Image (tube, rainbow, N blue to C red; front, side):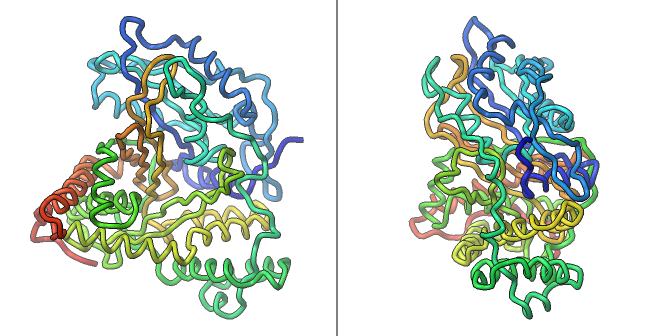
Amino acid sequence: MGDTLTALDGTFLELEDAQDGALMHIGAVLVFEPMGDAGPPTLHAVCRLLDERLCGLARFGQRLSAERTARWAWPRWVEDPRSPIADHVRRAALPAPGGEAELDDWIADFYSHRLDRTRPLWEMVVLEGLEGGRWALAQKIHHCLVDGMSSAGVNEVLLDAEPGGEPAGELPALRGDVGGASWRSLLPLPPAPLAQATSAGAHAITAALAATLRPYETLARSRLLTELIVTDELRAAPRTSLNVPIGPSRRYAPVRCTLAELARIREALGGSMNDVVLAACASGLRRLLVERDEPLPRAGLRAMVPVDLRTAAERLSLGNRVGSLFVELPVTEPLAVERHRLIVTRTRRLKNAGAGEASATFVDLAALAPPLVHASLARLLYGTRLFNLTITNVRGASAPRYALGGRLQEIHPIVPLAPEHTVGVAVVSHDGGVVFGINADRDSMPDLNVLAAGMREGIDDLLAAVHSSPTVHPSRNHKEPSSCRHA
């Protein structure tokens, strides 16, 4: 008998089943510098590397025992002897001239197709034909197998710290229990306040589950869960054009900057690197809504920001162990510096309150329910009432990395789109460079370039403010049309 999927891992299968356009794979396209006259590595060389480095990761040789979650039981991970490494790796080439536009189109198409659930849930492509002799290794891995942090760990296993050297990271341990907490770690729900904040159906479920929990485990996580459900039920995320039914076809656009630029802003304005990332995204989203002549929601757009909840012992484990911060992005504020200040204040308050644990508590609680009930709870946690888009930020290696002798130049990350979420942003740093990878629904986001330009402009505005004076003053801003309105 194989390990059973955890409730959180199973959530990503259920979300994908909820809407044809929801594709729950994550991934990255690793772009490498030219390798001289040798050209890109052969398919055989890549397969040999994967065979050597992934041999300790059992999930890459396992498939699901069933393609969908059953009404009363989760699928299990079972061995699949039919799928050797070579069956998951293929070669592709960009059309000439192999520039930025061709690469973006290829990335969009690659992530527009689901993984086959009858096989191990991953695939890789050796991509050649990039301008200047560059080549790439594109990865697609289902979210039920890894999250953003554990996929970064897989990359460290595949990459070398020196040309032709040893793996830059240890082989991740495969632990079937990582990704969902034991029921003993859960806390019961407070009876009256939560009942008033939730719907009758949610109250009935939570009351029944609370009866199974120990009475002395009552305070901290109960309060966090209460706040999360109150946010969902009473202060829902605004309805905007970012939240409409989506199809499976994607668009992709990168926004580049340097780690030094983001660090300069953080040092001058305070907060964290992630706050600077969120401020850049808020600038782009503001410009997008303004260009669409769409009312700007007064409370802001709500971003779901994944938070890694692994302990030190779980750091190199696969599976999912994440919580979420739900951060309002102040798109009504016209000044970039003020948007950043508001975001710093909000994220600090959320972190101090332990808000990242709240969504994890919700999933832990939902794990006590059978899949039939859990599917509804999963859609609630990843629904449009709770957030408008996902923004995730993963810190990569600060030093050079290599694969098969080629030096890694940059990483294009992908975050999946939940049902009725038209855009998501994944941010990865590597060797001093940063790429904001914007994944978007093709039909509802024809103006993706506006969002990308606005994000880069937001970074430039903050840099201009930092450079203008030792005492930061409001920066220059994109000129708003007179039709700009607030909801």
